[in-house]
Every structure is written in C-alpha cells, then in structure tokens.
Length: 122
Image 1 (cartoon, rainbow, N blue to C red):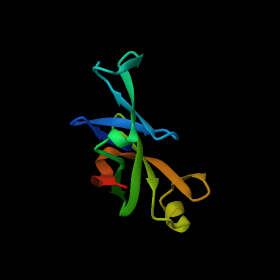
Image 2: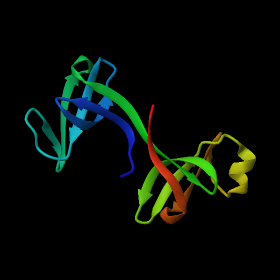
Image 3: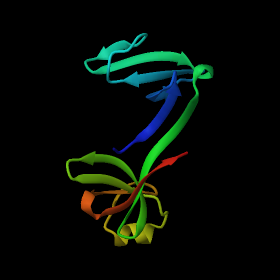
Image 4: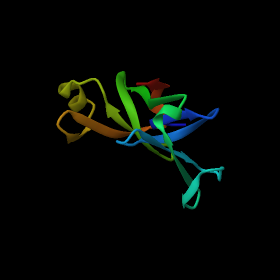
C-alpha cells in the first residue's frame, strides 16, 4: 500500500488524518464507526482535539528508481508516479523526468522497476 499523508493513532486505531489550524484533527475511515459522520459514500469523518491523539505523524512512501531516490506521489495499475528527491537538476534531466515546478521533477515508472519501497515517517 502506498501512503502519503498524515496518520493519527486514536482510541487504539490508526486513521488517515488532516490537522486543522484550530488544534483539531479530522480523522477519516472507510467504514461506519461511532461518532463518525458520513461525508460521502464510503468516507466517514470525526473531528477530535489534537490533545486526544496518541500520535500524529506524516508518512510517505519512498523508493529507489534507476539508482536514484524518489518519493511515490501516486499510483495507477502497474505504474507509480514518482518524484525525484535527489535535488540535482542534471540527474533529473538525464533520467528524462518531467519538470513540474522549480526543483520538482516527476515521472510515471513501471512498478517492476521500483526497488527499496518503504515507508518513512517525518
């Protein structure tokens, strides 16, 4: 599973999360649960105080592609959308990456070419 975003531990379970500016955190689940409201089919939300959480971390999935470091920012079927994190424009250009913005380089890579897939907690 490719994860990129906030994850909160609350009440003995782990939830996708979104911190608010007012010391609250929105918790999300795909299944109905007590105290959660349905926001759309298959998506439920509960707002809690950040102080109630056991933990709140940002998790992203990183990897190596063609010998260089990347973070995975998307996936579709057998392809992964990867973003170069090495910080060297000549390397990004040599890999044939698409320049998305200043210093931001991405491409679609076949899942079979991506190695050393692992989660990183920031």
